[in-house]
Every structure is written in structure tokens, then in C-alpha cells.
Length: 125
Image: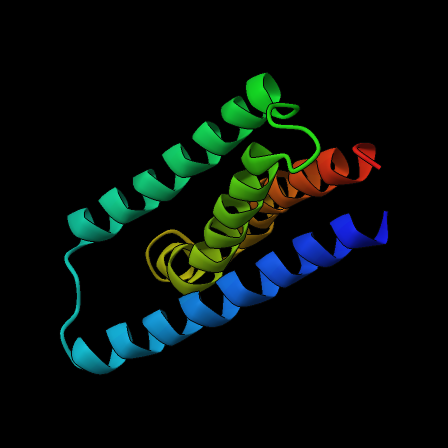
């Protein structure tokens, strides 16, 4: 019901704010120091692996711990991290090194991760 929606919404908001603050601190500390192409590719790979782990864990353990569903809350946290990391790191990386036309297909994939998490949350109601 509404309590579950409130929990998910609060989780998304807190994770987004904290991650944005960490990203700002990261950009201030690394100001003017570009990463190597290889380091950026590794960072993108970590984000892709995180997406796969989230989807696998949700597909197997989504109903564990009812009525609190801690796996679903954890999946929501990781989904928000994946989406925000995509905005902060992957889109600029792809646009600079591979071409802007790839941004739309990549965005579709990350949005599907958030969609799956949200749909699972709603299915619990």
C-alpha cells in the first residue's frame, strides 16, 4: 500500500541525494585530472555487472523477508546507483569516445533495471 510506496520513494530520494553529494566531492577532488580510457572502460564494466547482479538477485530472491522485503529495498538502492552512475559516468564516456547515438540504447537498458525493481515493488501490494 501507501507505506510501501513511501518506503521506496524515500529510499530512492536518500540514495540519489547521497550519491550526488559523493559525485560532487569526487569531481572537486579530481578536478583537471582525466582518467585513462582503460580506467573509464573498467568503471563502465563495473556498472554493467552491478546491473546484472541486481536483476539476478531480484529474479531469485525478490519475495524473501515478507512483509519488509529487504532484498527488494536493496535492489532499489542498487538500481538507483546504477541509473545515477549511468548519468554521471557512462553517458559522458560514450558520448566522448564512441558517439552520441549510443546514449539512447544505453539509457533504455538502465531504465529497464529501475522499471523491473519498481514493478516488483508494486506487485507486492
